[in-house]
Length: 370
Image (cartoon, rainbow, N blue to C red; front, top):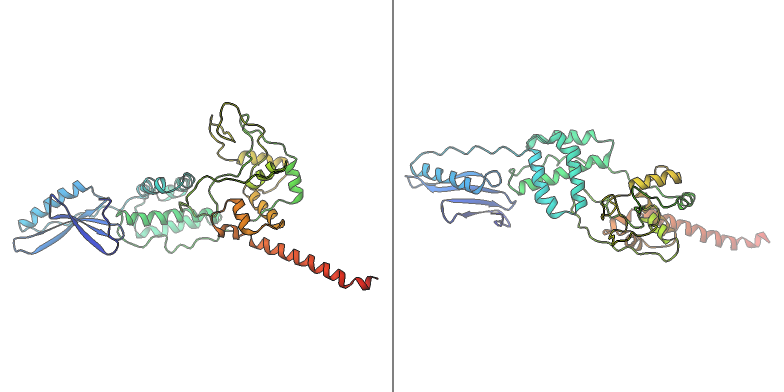
């Protein structure tokens, strides 16, 4: 059944055993079971049995046999009771198992699960998907307006869920309740380390966290790209980070990736993780706790771990590196992600132009100084 599809319009596929029983497949992916046969007067009659997904094939075949028998006896078959729309909880479970766990990387699955558990299911879990769901979704979006990026996440997840529900035949084609909800503009914050903050950060020793030798990482974090929309399923993979050659390279790479110091030593016994975590043999899953300790010791106010990457990009631009090179250093897969630093490049160009102008002006006005 899952292999039946059409590229455009719709088509009927008939059963081999019960020839008057078939399924109508639409280009959207929706599949409807039907029974078609002739009555005593010789007139052909087609009756819908149910939607694939809401009714099992064997159950649909049994109902079709009964309908065919009624038509053959000249009786008017009763129309099937419409299946109730799925609840948001049922749709969320199908979305997780058939889409997230199959097509998305683990970090995306974790993020979407968190959005579902914290926001969507508590507000909408028992609701059934229908056109009247739009005000409920809009209300949820409005309640979270003080956190624009987080408020947009449930709408992004729900929009994907609704599109897939129609494709799977769980709902008839209809407009998504998310269609008219305008996403809040994300306020991009830019926080860069100053030279003085770099000095204070360099004075902080490596932080031993939770259990020896779990130290703060000397590598770029491999978490979800904060610029990627939730549920985008952007493919992940291993990333090779370039290493510097100077003694301070370890600390520099740690700052670039949001790390908090060099790893003092690797544990013996074949430990595969460079940054061991709480679980024996497993990697450290995040650096938030040790980073908070470092910020407190270095007196860094309002400094997120991700802001270290902004600082790294800013310093690279000041040293004359191009935006494409910075994108490669930061592991960006899309040029749009690096383009956010373009204004810093313009600032660097302006500073260079000012230096050149001052130099020329100095030569031009030299005679007056004499």
